Amino acid sequence: MDNDYMKQVMASLVPVKGSISDEEIAKRAANENELQKKFDNRKGPSVDGSTQIDYHVYSPVAEGSKEKYPVLIWLHGMSQGQCFREPLRGSEVAKFAGAEFQEKFGGGAYVVVPRANEDLGQYATFGFMYTNSWRAGHDEFGRSGQLPELVAALKQFFAEEEGNIDFSRVYLTGFSAGGYMTWQTILAMPEIFAAAAPICHAWFVPSDEDLAKIAHLPLWVICGEKDFLYTPFVAPTVEKLKQKHPADLLRVSIFDTVLNADRTIAADQHFSWVSVENDMYYADGKPYDEKYTDGFIAWLMSYTK
Image: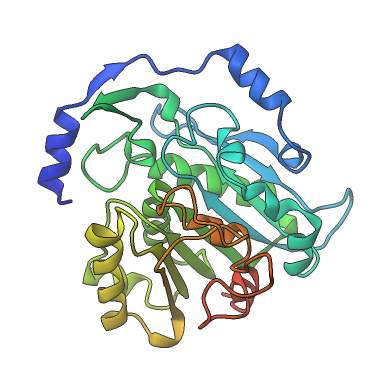
């Protein structure tokens, strides 16, 4: 799906009213589970008058603590930024705030979940709803989208929590539209992250120049072979990475069939992020990828910047 095609798609968009009511937002918040409720609400700064983005934070820090903790940043996919706190409910990212996963981080980690401003405008094209997610914003067909707002929010978070962050262990992952934004963020802030994992990413194949910027960065690319994004975006990205990225810093997991933790077939073959939400282990303890038996969190934590 090249840039000209994206322009054709975007030209066909018809604005529609897609906002979720305040009552529905309140209802969804009231029905959050205990892990989701552990995330507080913050708002990043405006960039040249733009709309600020929300980000939700789980903090492992006890009052008065001077310990330093790693940070996992999770970028949601399209349709999961439609309203306040929706990224926490659209996937099982809140699992990372649970005791089992926090212990795997060596006794605790921040989990930061930003939200794209999808509620600012929804569109209809080709018979389906389209939010444009992270890509909407400054440069409709280019590479910025809401990247300036996201970078500003992350910098604000780093400043607010500076005393308790282990800046040698800041990690980034995201899926689908959030996988696209994972690529954009590591290219915008290549010095920040210790490792990153773009999952079933959309809209992007890195250039040689891009890969040169992140040649130092451990990457784990994850996708399903039957995913509709695999052929246009993930497959050519993997091919380039295997040619250009240091082999000892690259993991690639391409699933023949995307499965849930109980080994039932996932609701959609696009849903390869369920493997990461389960730390790359099935419920029976077997790894999702037999080549990599250490789990997702252990892989992250094996790298420091």
